[in-house]
Structures are given as C-alpha cells and as structure tokens.
Length: 395
Image (cartoon, one colour):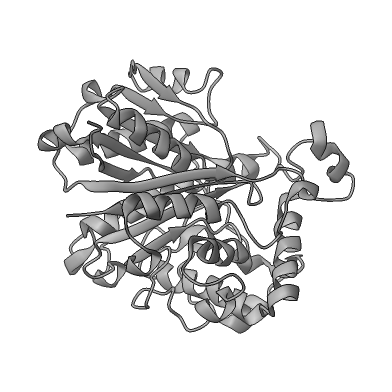
C-alpha cells in the first residue's frame, strides 16, 4: 500500500538584503536549518530536489551539500516548480522510491543585479514560438497585464479591488520581522504608485529580494524519527497550459483550475474548509485569478471576494500570512516559500508570541492563524503556464 507523506521540516535561509552570501550559501543554509528542524541529519536524506543552480542540476548542488541521493528531481516549470516537485516527491515517497526528500531553493537576485552580475530577464527567450511575440514587447509583466485587463473587461473587476490584494499583503507583512517591506500601505497609495505595465503600479508587482528556503518530506514510517509535528500531504495536483499567448484559450483562467480540482478531490476536502491559503502572488491579479481557479469563488467574482479584507490575518481566508511576494520575499521564484509558510502555520509555530525570526527578532502572536488545521499552497509558473497545488493538514 502507498505510504502517507508529510512535511517534517521547513526553514528559511537569510532573506531580504543578503550581500555576504552566494546562491550556494543560501541553499546550504536553508537545507541545514530544515533538516535540523526535522530532527534529522544529512545521512537520513535519500532524495533531493533543486532547480536553477549548477552545471548539472541538481547533482552539483547535492554534492556541495554533501548529499548522495538516489532519487532526484530538477523540474523547471517556472515559479511554481517546487509545488510540482513536491507532488513528484510525495509520489516517490509513497511508492517507496525514497524515504526522506529535501526540496531547496536560494537566489541572490537582488544582490547580483545591484552588482551588475546579471540583467533582469524581461523577454523569457527569443527562440521557438515565443520569437513571434517578443518583437511586440510581450514581456512577462505585459502578459499578466493583458490578462488582467481582460478580466476587468469581462467581469468588471476594479483597480481598487486589485489594490486591496497588495494592501492585504502589506498588512500581513507587518507581523513578519523578516519581511522586506513592513510599512502600512493604503489603496490610494497602491493606485497612485508608478505605472509598471498598465494597469499595474509598482505596488502590484512582486518585490526583488534575496533569500532561500527548504522543506523536508518524509514517509509515515519515518515520522517517529522526527522532532516536529507532521504536516500531511493530503492531496496534490499539477497541470500546464501554454507558453505563447496565442495558444491560451482563456486569458482569465489558469492551470490552477485543473491542478486545484485534482488536489482537493484527492484530499477529500473543499476550498471552503481551508483555514489559510498560500498563493503565488507575483502580481495582484495572479493571486485573484488563482483564488477563482481553485474554487474559493466563481470565475469573475474575485474582485468582490477580496475587497472586504478577508485575505488579511484575522480575515475569513488569511492568504500569504507572511506578506507574500508582494511584500515579504521574492528572490526570483517563490513557490517553495509557500510550502514553508503553510507548514509553519499548520504547526502553530508562531502561536503564543514566543517564536523568534531568523534575524533574531520576536514574532508577534498576530502572525499565527489561530487553530489552523488545513491549508492550500498553490504555485503558478510563467504567465499562468503551469501550476502545482497541494492540500496540507495536521491531525
């Protein structure tokens, strides 16, 4: 019989403004912290997942970490890669191909750009089918802006409703001592920000930071070896949609509509049972569309759904309690951070106001979603090109 699978370790590396470490350092720091959080050692790890670093991904990163895994994954489907990897890892563990699998990500995007080591990738390639779009300025943000405008046209979604998503993210970030931005933000400030790609102002776009994180997945028969309460993978799903805009059937719907349905059906629960949600939020509309696609509201009703403050801590559906990619941390690809935050919330890591953040500051009790038992983590890659969704829970 397939084995149950749980997340037994979760940790962040240093995040925010990290000028004294390399990508490899952040990977190592995150893995060391996550494995220690699980109460295990590197010798317990027999599976490894990473992407975006190294000549032979993920082999040289595993070597750098002193690991010799016999099961690996280096899937690349954009920012939601780690949700898809987690699906793969959960299946591998369930079927006995590995017992303990580490997923890790780390990037010094902000620091590298600051030093002139790299340039921002705006076009995402100029070969293959995308070459016919690049000439017309279809950058990543433009693709999201186009889909946002389509949603506004079809369903009457307003700029104020989209702005509330950014305001909610900043509201949540105020309780996160390692969030990149923690100052309050108003709807008017969001709307009056500098235009990046119509209709997005700068506050509706993800920040650029440094940082990394890791999680540890383990089989149920290894739970007794672990130091933390297991957060069970109850259900998961993943799907892909398109790369070229001309092949996108509906600009208002992404592959989360498929992956989410799979995850909730396999978990045997529904969206309205979730205590919190961790949703990839590279842009405000990305979060709104994913909430619709996952079934938290009907297609086109995302605007009214978010405008009453329900995404804030203390609201009906706390979403991205850490502040998300809009305010907390976005080092290039954010998917794995969703799984770390969901895990910590379900374990009640912030309850009581006694927890300490990675920078040594106390974490306010308000950061904790009270009595959280069920969460969904949904990572989208590209411009609604891919999605991986996991439903997580504690007994």
